[in-house]
Amino acid sequence: MPELSQVEGFVIRSVELNRSEAKITLGDVTDQPGIVAELFNRLAKDEINVNLIVQNSGGDGKVDVTFTMPRIQMKEALAICNSIQAMVGAAFVEFDSNIATISVIGVGMRSHTDVAARMFTALAENNVNIELISTSEIEIGCVVKGQQADVAHTALLKEFADDLE
Image (cartoon, rainbow, N blue to C red; front, side, top):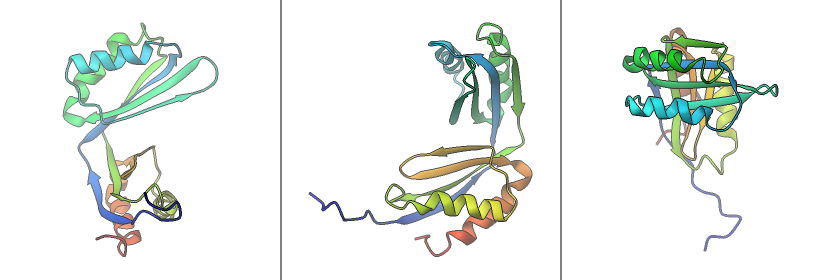
């Protein structure tokens, strides 16, 4: 068994840019059990590949649900969202097909607390606005506007150049 003081090794494998996604937001959705299940069951039934899901609560009994999917599936996903908008109590449905996902991928992120800070600082210093954030044990990903994708990618490659294996 490893000692508690032992720190997991840190290796950034890559900084990846994905320009092939779109995002949809259902806004002011009724916050109750089963609503999100209904949405994602409908998307699954039509074989929409959801890549990122963010739900946030306003504390007023309403939530916003945003997800990304391959841009080539946006039309179908949007049709599903529009068809269930009234049923889930969504005040609006918005979409954006001009996004990109930029990710820092590697091992040891859990034991290296500065990766997110470095990533967000590098993006901020290059005037890149973050729209969504996702994290896992091996990845931190951000959704940015498509026109900021190259700047974001270059900034993160520069920031993590010494860490890339």
